[in-house]
Amino acid sequence: MERIIFYCLAAVIIVFAIASVTSRKMLRSVIYLSFVLISIAGIFFLIDYNFLAAIQLTVYAGGIVVLIIFSVLLVHHIEMELEMAKTSQKILTAIGCLTGLSVFLTAIYSFEFNEINNSLTTTTEDIGTGLLSYKAGGFILPFEVISVLLLAAMIGAIVIAKGKKLTEKNNDPQ
Amino acid sequence: MNSALSITKNIHDWLYEIMPEGVANIVEMVLIALVYLGIFAIAGLFLVLLERRVAAWFQLRIGPNRVGFKGLLQTMADAIKLLSKELTGTEKADKLLYNLAPYFVIISSLMALSVFPFTREFQAFDINIGIFFLIAISSIGVIGILLGGWSSNNKFAMIGAMRSGVQTISYELSIGLSLLTMVIITGSLQLSEIVEVQKSGWLIVQGHIPAVIAFMIYMIAGTAETNRAPFDMVEAESELGAGFHTEYSGMKFAYFFLAEFINMFIIAAIATTVFFGAWLSPFGITESIPVLGVFWFLLKTLILVFLMMWFRWTFPRLRVDQLLTLEWKYLLPINLVNIVIMALLVWHNLTISF
Image (cartoon, rainbow over all chains, first blue to last red):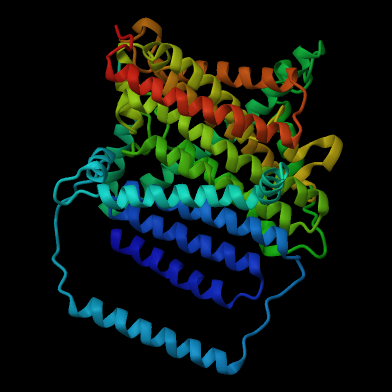
């Protein structure tokens, strides 16, 4: 049963991943991409990793795809189609992708995976204490670094959005 | 006592008797899906009827009263009429996305419906991150609205879709944070455990002042999330025709319409589960009859739905800038302070529990 579901999800992922790079209509590619991301969430549900699945749905399907759709809505007209790439570019990209894929596949096939037979789901409590623990195996440093990065991004966004008003205010007293 | 609840168990046993395990498993899944589809359709239709009756009551009219007893079958008749209508569409629309959009909206609300604990036994999917799953799913529905607005190749629809995107993205924050405030008390995201915690007092009583503030923020943000008046700029009739679904007709329009009402039901049901004890009866008066859980759940949910309808027919529509000011300058700061207060309360054991 689980095997069938896995193959269904895998087929969906592969078909829509190819569709999203070959489609010449921009918004359609975004939708195909969202199908890929949602099916990946499905695979996380399949291995009982519910938290990561929900994160995948919120952050990728709900957040990033919505933002991409938003920007497409702003800049793209419905009758426009993306232009085809040059042949030389196509060949270069194909070579690059194949090299990447071969590295990826050799890495996967040279590693011996151990089968673990526990069906223990990770609770949010474990994740929370793991993120805040400063002992060995804790993630407090990356957590804090990422929070500083996010803060910087937020301040940057506000400065860009309000740019003109801020500089005008600063220049006034002179 | 368990007569109604053991029906599901009997069906389960019977299915496994007459079929091999794999097939029985699939048949069971299909049956559960059909039950939820039935709930979806019936709840949607009767919420539309309720809305019309409540609207009529607020405007001193009688409302639909001809079809069936006291007009009970009015919306059924409407649905049949919509089924028989022609599906029109614009010539230069992106047909694929145009047809796909209603399904995004309807599937996401159907998935959200599956996690609610209607009673102790009647819960299809008791996932250990229940509330988080609900927030995740509700963020997908907006894709359908954006798609529908863009692919109909109509300026009004496009503006409606853009407004909806802005509104949903901003108000999702408030919904998430106000639910997080309550999660601090429960210490769990699983809906059945949240109900379990409320056996010693509903959360709105346990958390007293911050809980009431969180509830108010949740109801405001929830009304905005479902795109209903006073936050209905998405389909502001006087400005945009019908907003993102201007070009939709027949059953495709009905999908959007039903999904809006089901989303309202979902928002009210989340509030019931998190703030008002889901299927628990007040003061435990019917604890010996678990079947009545469904009754209490629906009663509380419908009261909250009525509250949202009350909003709709009382307040005038906000402008876009007022809407964003409300969210980013008022609700969000209040919410952040509220979380800290709630954390302090829980830390010092100042919650009320019986």
